[in-house]
Amino acid sequence: MTLTTTPPAARTSPAVNAARLVRLEARRNVVLLLLPLLALLFWFDAYRAVMATPPYWALRGIVMQKHILLDFVPLLAGVAAWVGSRDGRRGTGELITATSRPRWIAQCAAWTATTGWGVLAYVIGVGILYGRTAAQHAPGGPAWWPAIVGLCSLPAFTALAFAAGAFFSGRFTTPIAAILALLLLEAGFRGASQSSSPYLLIVPLNALPGSTPSADVAVFGPYLPDLSICQIMALAGLGLAALAALGLPPGAAGPAARRVFAGLIALGLALTGTGVALAGTGRQQATGLVAVPALHNAADDRTIAYTPACTTSATPVCVHPAFREYLPATQAAFEPILRELAGLPGAPARIEQGPSGYAGGTPVHLSGQPPVATVDLAEAIPADTGRAYTTAELTDIFRRAFAPPLVAAVVGTGQGRPDEAQSAVLEGLLLASGTPQTPCSGACMVSEVGAPRPGSAAYEAGKRLAGLPADVRHDWLAEHLPALRAGRINLEQLP
Image (cartoon, rainbow, N blue to C red):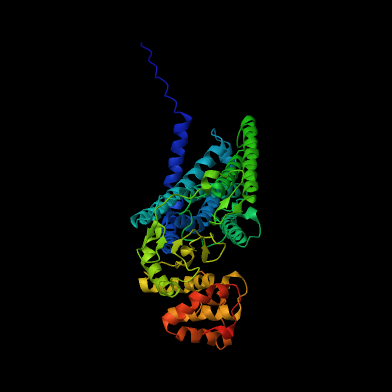
């Protein structure tokens, strides 16, 4: 009689078992049923909002960071809370606790599957948006920091919601988790926009304070990653603490593992607190982005070298090469008023685009010798590019935005409260150049640069000046403009 033995089955490694468990959870995960809804939310909100902005990487990245998180986070947080409360709703908690596998492993597998589908949908959405931006030949390279913040937000919020579902498995946990996620995002975004507290910048919807970044954000200089790093730190800490909390209840893990989980919770909270504290020290720069002193790299303050795109006119008009498409409209907007100012003392010898915030909120800044007019072109570009603006429409927008402050800078009304003679000459030059007298929709209003009220004595004097022959008007201004700027010309001395 021969005795035969059967070799013992090879033991499967824990990593392989965990991967199998995640695969099982992923195959029957409720997120699969909601992917069409996520796609609709993405299409009607994030995609349209991003594509309605000019094709600049940083601008679109910032807009994407807000809208795609509003579309994805509340829904996925609700789903995570639903999956996390599954054992409590079904009353199977004791059965799972009695199994050989620690309960926290099964819970982490369910969270990983839920979050994985959400992250995959997010990556596809970002790929679509950035792919379309690349197809529109956006200058520079992709702005990855806004995309990374969004990528870190999904695991953090789903971890918090999953833990809430695991500890509070009531039927209202799911809608409450979704609503709280939405309210937290919105309240933090609105609070940061209204400057109620710098610490609210930590909310991941905020790439900068305010809801409408300039079109030239991170075009003249690098994108500042300071705030994004703070947000990633806070999100990573929250996610780590929430997942580690799953291993604390009795029976979820062994005593040694529970001590490790307690340490991870402390580490996560410390990381979150550090991120929030650093964000509170952030200061908004002239470019709109936030610099955090402890994280800021001085090299990020440099201006990126570029060769401007210029016209060949008598007074060159130059823009950043990223804004080359706006050069014809910019030139056409300045031509009428430059004809009136040509040869006058203090008239600009060159018009060039500067970064937003360069002139401290003034759309046109005149400086140097010979004078150079620096214009904040990005502020006047329509925010909604969902429709195609013609060159004529852009010319009208730019003329309303820049002609009045340019004349004000030359005449002297931009140096304080203008006198009647200065206001009259300003009005006369605007009328002679055909500049519209209605408020502009971009960077300024005509009334803000000292133009007189219709019917006033200064307004009537300006109309008389505009009615003079062009050479007569030009000769008088060439002789008397320095005295006018100094306030030594009164209304009766105007021709």
